Image (cartoon, rainbow, N blue to C red):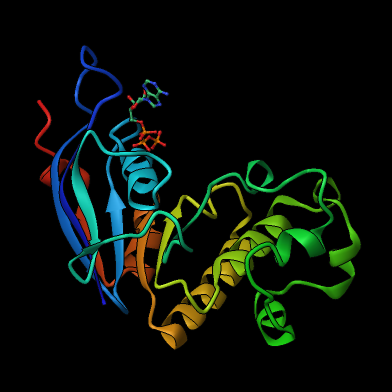
Length: 205
Ligand SMILES: Nc1ncnc2c1ncn2[C@@H]1O[C@H](COP(=O)(O)OP(=O)(O)OP(=O)(O)O)[C@@H](O)[C@H]1O
């Protein structure tokens, strides 16, 4: 499958400056594409547009040439930087985990999720533990592309390494295409099959 970002431009309103201008790129299944650029350059904005959280001012996001159906399950899923902001604080972890599909024991084991954590509230888990749930939650059989926006930036190096090892194994198994946003060039070089500097493809002035 191919995810195509076609002539995407974005600004907040008619008078504000362009944040993204004429962005074109393609991600094939099985690819892990890194996006780098300085802070404030529009990486997260692009991620939100690709995952359908924000509408572009112009341009299209296509999968195999077709626009994504906004009414069904979105095959492009996003994992956010702050897991504590992406879960319902009033749901126990079992409900959070099974929000859109039912990850099996093998998946939980691979991501290092302990069964005992399922009975807890989000506030009773560490950031790394919570992020493992946020990852498991989006790995439904209907997911085809994953957008990872600084998903391990706030974690210690051991959790970072464990999470990326598990996620890459799963992505390879399921042939996901991935877009990986990071400030960590060392990490990008280790895990990405290709790296794009947003400054090279963003035609904003
Ligand atoms: N709600 C908003 N209203 C107006 N401008 C915004 C809003 N949200 C973000 N911006 C601006 O959009 C630009 C791009 O922000 P974005 O978060 O996409 O950058 P980024 O490259 O992901 O930065 P970082 O690496 O620091 O996370 C920034 O200049 C930011 O100030």
